[in-house]
Image 1 (cartoon, rainbow, N blue to C red):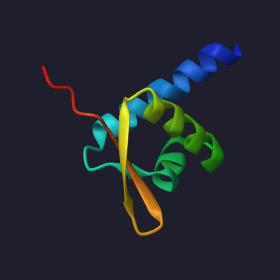
Image 2 (image 1 turned 135 degrees about the vertical axis):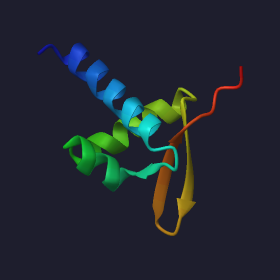
Image 3 (image 1 turned 90 degrees about the vertical axis):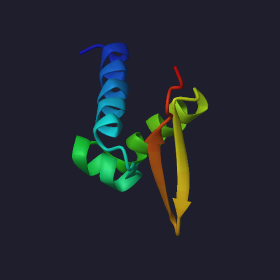
Image 4 (image 1 turned 60 degrees about the horizontal axis):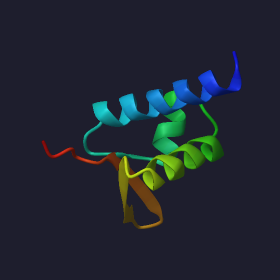
Length: 72
C-alpha cells in the first residue's frame, strides 16, 4: 500500500475511533484499539490537533484527545 494512502487510512481510523468515543481516548488507548505503535498514534494526534480537528485535556500525566465539536 502506498505511503499516502496508508497515512490517510490511519488518519481516518483515528477520527472514526474518536468519533465513537465521545469522552475521548488517551494515546495508549488509541494505539491499543487501532493496533498501532504509541509513537505513531502520538504523531498523528499531534498533526490532527495542529490542524484544529482535535483537542486534548491533561489528566495527570495522560492526555485525553477528543474531536473538536463542530458548531453548525
